[in-house]
Image (cartoon, rainbow, N blue to C red; front, side, top):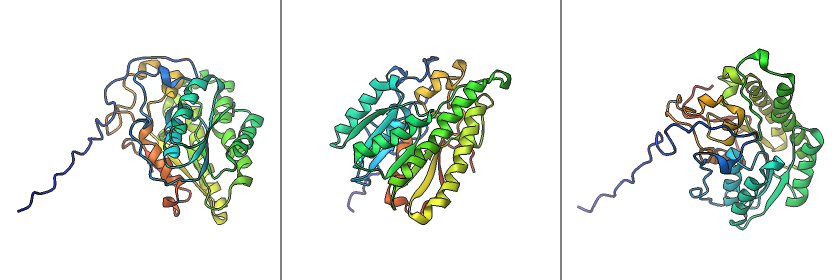
Length: 300
């Protein structure tokens, strides 16, 4: 009998990425990828594209690190030109992402802006359209998250900044982008497991993520007749600078993500394929949906 084909070893999702404890660490906001210990995996050495976004033009907010960085790398390797938005102090991280994009032969545009204010947020879209020569993918990913253990200590300033960064910016940027989007375009918003299972210390952040869910579904129904699809991705606990720059209490960092059924935090690289799917024509019948990438945590 001929030799039977061998089955390749399948990666165990429990240990496919970092599965131990994290060193306790605190970074100054907004956090920097190059200071994170251990480094997050954005798919730099693993993501392989197949031309699913060839010729597309994408704007991604919060693209210097974390999920946004992973999505930018994946989009470029799938054939897209990418405009990267970030806070100005994150310039070094953003330049690293731009270099990775340019290695694919596609265009990277660096657009620092504080999108918690209306004019910079709207100007970001205008600058992206001008530099890219159009726009057909918008990823509203940037987020502000600061842990606060007691409602009595949650200031109006923090509550306002969280809503402005996570909700108002999404509204401003999406509204400004709409005149440039035509049929076949895709809008993808980053929500969170926090929208469904809010942590007591993240009341303001969780509130914004629930709002993003509703905004996504309502806008999806409004734009579907125009051939523009709107969807969302809901990450679980993902290892990014957001977590160690005030997003989690310092004492919670070592065991971050270990209560998930998989027993570990996720990595940004594990999120990027969901965004690629929602941006590509492969998801042409997916409208107003939320993809949950959360290690098995309970979600609707």
